[in-house]
Structures are given as C-alpha cells and as structure tokens.
Length: 406
Image 1: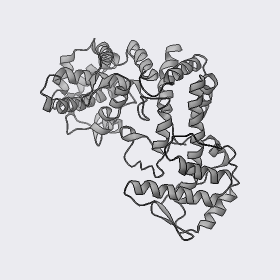
Image 2 (image 1 turned 180 degrees about the horizontal axis):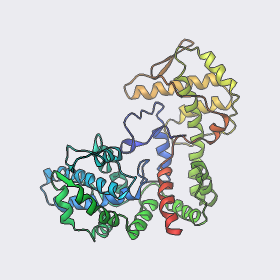
Image 3 (image 1 turned 180 degrees about the vertical axis):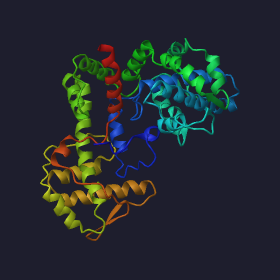
Image 4 (image 1 turned 30 degrees about the vertical axis):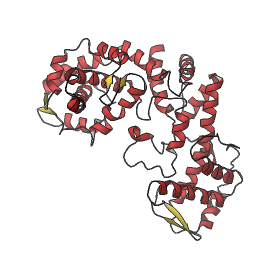
C-alpha cells in the first residue's frame, strides 16, 4: 500500500496532515539508519542536475554583494532548473520534478519555451523543485552548505566533472536572465547535457556518497547498511517488496544495524495497527462506538505480533504503549478511545480541532473518509505505512549498485 505520509517540511507534499503525529515517531528511528536522504530524494539524476545548477549559479553570482547574493543565486537556479528540465525531457528523462507542466509545454505548438521566473514548472518551484527538496539531502551528504547552496570541496569536484565538457557560457546565456529556449537549441543541447549529467564516474561516486551518509551524523549504522546492501546487490537479493528488503538486510547486518532495524519493525507494527483503527473511525460518523467496537471484534484480529514493549526515549511513547497494550489484550474499546485521545492531543498542540471525538457513545467525525477500510489480519503483519527513508535508500541502491555490478 502507499505510505500514508512523508516526513519533514523539505519532503512533505501539501495536504499531508499526520493526524496522529507519527512523523516525529518514524523520523526518530529512520534517522538512526539513514541520516541524509528524505522520502523524496531517490533519483541520482536529480542530485546530479542539482549539483551542476548550484555550481553554475555560484559561478555567475558568487561574488554578488551579501544582501542580494542568495536571491540572485536562487532565481538563477530556478531558471536553470527549467532549462535543464526541457533538455532532459528532450532526452527522454522520466525523473523531472514538474514533468507534467514540462511535458505540456514541450508538446504545445509554441516555437520557443519560456525560461523565466514567471514560467515556473511547479506551483512553487523553489519549494517543490530541486532547490527546496534536494538541497537538504545534498547538505546532509556533505556536498553543499548554507542557505545559498554553495558546494563543498567534494561537491565542487563532482560538479566540475559534470561540467567539464559543456560550454558553460552558452548555457549561461539561456538562464542567466529571463529569456527563451528555441526548439532548435533544445534539440541541439539536450544530448550533450544528458551525457554530461550521466557520466558513469559521477554516478558511481555520487551513489557511494549518498548511500554512505556523513560520518559525523547520528546515523552511525549507515556505513554498515551500505556494506549489507552491497552484499545483497552482489548476490542478487535486493529484490521484492519493501518488507522483504528489510528482512534481507537483517540477515546480513551487523548487530548494531540489526538492533536499529528491529526497533523500526517493532514500532511500525504498532503504527500500522493504530492507523487501522483510526482511519476506520473516520468512516463512522454518527455511529455508536459500541457498533464500531463490535465490527473490530468481528475481524478476529490476532495481535500476537505486536511488541511487548516499545523502545525508550521515543516521541509519543506513552500514547503508543496505551494503544499497543489495549490491542494486545483485544480491548478494541480501549484502543478506540486511545487513538482518539492521541489525535485530540496532537491537534490541540497544533492549535486545531480533533478529527474525531466521542460524544457519549456516538462518534463525531470532523474530517471524514470514504475510502478507508479495515485491513486484513495479514495486512497488519505485512503492511508498511512509513518507509523511514529506507525507500529512497533502496531505490538509489537498486538502480545504481545493480548497474555497476551487472
């Protein structure tokens, strides 16, 4: 099933509201194993394009006065991202952020394509494009720094390798200020831009940096994760669904990594079970709590898979322990009250109203759902609602390590 939410502001789409406050829970455990990636940053191609853009934008405006430098760099990068998107589309890329609008513009009858701050390829390109969503992962990987996205020495070395065979001045003329990209220019420049941003030496080095993470971060087991992942790729075992990948890593992991992944699996079972109850409540407006509990009881759930205890030091531990304890004893009434209370506490802390309340024995649902259904017993065992940044990690590993070892 799709993950129910994405994490932190740099990775989270508009409309993600996290009514039980589980973002803070799974990010705590996810950051123990993957310290640099977000749920969005799974494309090495996007990382490469962003590196080149930051490098070029600083070449153009790096010496501007302090008051205007960051603004000029950002605006120049946004135009560069538009140019890069059209060149990538021409070359056949499927990984463009803003591909819907890019495709629409590319297939229109206009003789040229606007490259300007008014011709953005996303509703808010600075927030939802490479500038907003990939820059934090680049910083946390040790490749960029500061609010103006200046490349570190390691990031600059990669960018210089990417740019080596490109005529920078020719490209600068197309995005330094607002302008247009002709169809002829697009067709002519696309192959060389594609070749520059897909150099094997860059892809291999960048993949290693992204999967390794930074040594000084809290994710002390990420190097162990890389070692385990490389073993699995060489053996052709990084396959299957997300849960299968976790189990495969567990089978070859170091003791410290095994412990971190075991905590993740224990916590995730509780989050899935809590979500199952809560989202079902959102379909039961004006229904008696007793009838909802009866329906849950009829599912004949077995909660033996839920952990006896939850790790110490985690956010919302008391609330989750209450939900977990009620479910383990088959007390659906207590579980319903506990998830409703958690939702009320989370929304109160945000200055908002709870999504569902119990008015006597009657549920009052303010944020209704028409699609949520109770999961099967098997789904409670196997579903993953959150990916703990490991989804992006595995996608990068599978797409790039397999190619290197193939």
